[in-house]
Image (cartoon, rainbow, N blue to C red; front, top):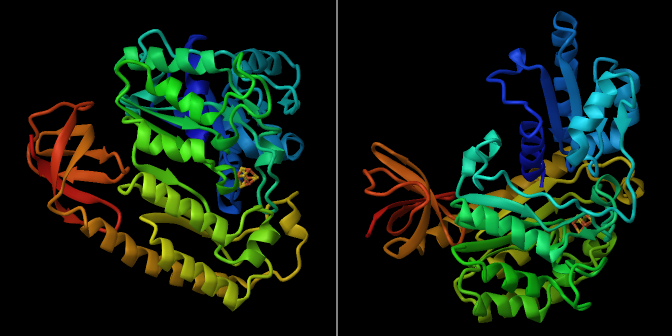
Length: 437
Ligand code: SF4
């Protein structure tokens, strides 16, 4: 979501005559687009803002803007403590950056962080070339693009800041999404990832289509019908909202990649209830089994939080059992950290740092073994790979299952080509292959 927001910011600025500076030291405008989902990311922002104080003293004409979730949550504190910051831009304001920056420079509001419940995502189309000639950040992945389909979340999981930093859930209109993707595909984009905090509830909170019951599975079918789109993905989903209609899409839509990131967070029902996830381990496993029935090749990944308040050794053991049962292709696992303003901050039973670290290490060690075992099953298979980079002596690209494949022999292809690759070696986090075309 942050990456996509950065692209939107870059395009909005490019449309207003800005172009990227090669270094921060030479920039007229520095924007920190921030994430507060974990404490570490937030600390990095604060220390970078401290460093920018000195830069601004040397070049007072430099403008500094803080955007994203830290801006949304800490805006007042940033403005009070950091007079060198010109503008704090809330998450619902990114499309208005040039206008708000001009106002701030002229002595107007320096912090605009209103979150309104009836927010509508503006109609926003890519630059005319489709691949974003005026939006330099987009060049880094010209053939794979993120497209926002919704913003915010109504779920209020107890550990999560998103409902407070991104606001209530709002879905974007179907026509706007299809128009944006059609332009991107016409400009050469091959793969689209639909983005939202909980894509499964797309269309449930505000009208997106003339049909009142239009949902995420309908949107997937509409996007898949865009001529020239080779690959379609989405992220992220709350398992409680994963329904049959979406599961069927994996069997019925050819361009939908066999990959699903389905965050489970914990393998203990007691902890899931304390997290307010509103599903049980049995519910989750039932959905995993159905996904695998409909799409046997599907690669499943997940998110795990270890050391959630109140997590006992037996709860953590249940998370390890879940890992053994599902054998995820990969996972993003983290130690729980208190996020200010969330309900989990107030829960008792906080876990000591060293216990969290030890549990995380145990989980990750086992996940690494499983990832390697799973990846080895691809050796000698021929897989379609979308090439992202081609160099004089090789290149890299991604499979439909979202595995990174490295090539170390010359490729008679160009970036953006989808080639057949024979997998020759497997590592924990990537594969090696050679062209089989
Ligand atoms: S569903 Fe996801 S984004 Fe929404 S509150 Fe829960 S963890 Fe946060």
